Length: 176
Image 1: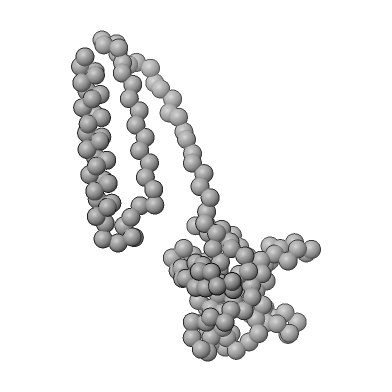
Image 2: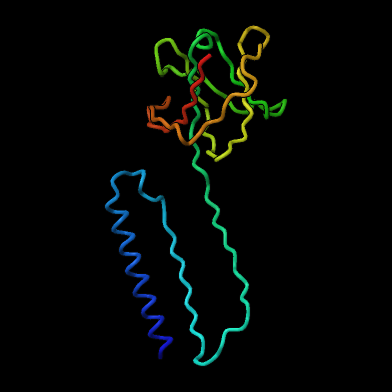
């Protein structure tokens, strides 16, 4: 009977905590404070009265695989780079395959700059592993930057794609 009362008390306090947490989320000042999702895992096991728990239980390990969001990458170039005809080359592409492809974008940050947008959306990762190189077109592929920086979730923008649909882009700014 005492075990049932303790279990009932734990459920009640757990429910109160959930209601408090939900009220906190609903009252958050900005979307930056809103969680993406929440997981509650509760496990209650009633032990027979008078029986001691002497065994060590193995912890179960669970994993949840979530797909990363795919977004377009957009490089903005300023300074002397903006005046050149550029090419972004995927160093990881096989000799026979083209790899990632970037096209000039008419939407630049400033009038004297240039921008290149990835043709396909790329998965966002904490540590992206893309090896991209900036070359000048027409000068035998002269290498201007050996390794371009990868996109970050910290710098996202929104713009209209070629088909007029709104899309999120990871913005990468380079001045040289």
